Structures are given as structure tokens and as C-alpha cells.
Length: 104
Ligand SMILES: [Zn+2]
Image (tube, rainbow, N blue to C red):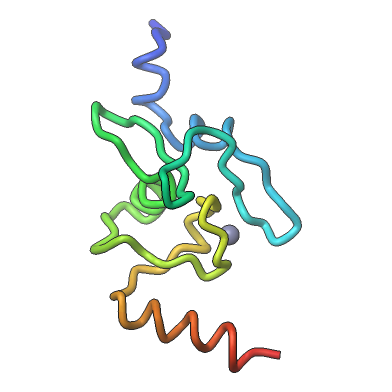
């Protein structure tokens, strides 16, 4: 069993993500690493730059997000795949509206 760095994260990128997050009281996985200008976590995986929530979603569900994806928790730096929804932009906006005006 050779364990070069490369092999390490190729084998289990999810583990690599989990080493860089802090789980908060809402079970959000708050990314502690590099972030994009918009505030999303990002990391390199298989020579590609990923937004971490997209990568986590892809690894967790075994499929790519069709688009940017929405955060149900509205925490941009969160990358808990269970907080990510595959949705179109219009749904995204609708959900933002619902969260802000129809809740509580
Ligand atoms: Zn979250």
C-alpha cells in the first residue's frame, strides 16, 4: 500500500473534504480552506478546480450537479451534500423568496 499524497486523495476525496470543515450546530459543513470570490469553498480535485459543495454533492450522490446548485441552509461556505439541492436558477430565487418572506 503506497500512500503518496496523490493516491491518498484520489482514494477518498470525501475524507479530504472532511479534514477541512467545521460542522456547526445546523450540521453545516463550514469550509475552512480557500474560497471563491462569491464565498463558495473551492478545492482542486483530479486536476480540476471544484466548488467544494459541488464536489461533495457529486461524491455523495454519485452524480454531477446540473448547475451551480442551491444551498438549503443558505450558507455559501457550507458543503454538506445533504444541504445542497440540484435546482434551476428560477427555483433558487423562488426558494430564497420563500425562505425570507414565507417562513416563521
Ligand atoms: Zn449547510
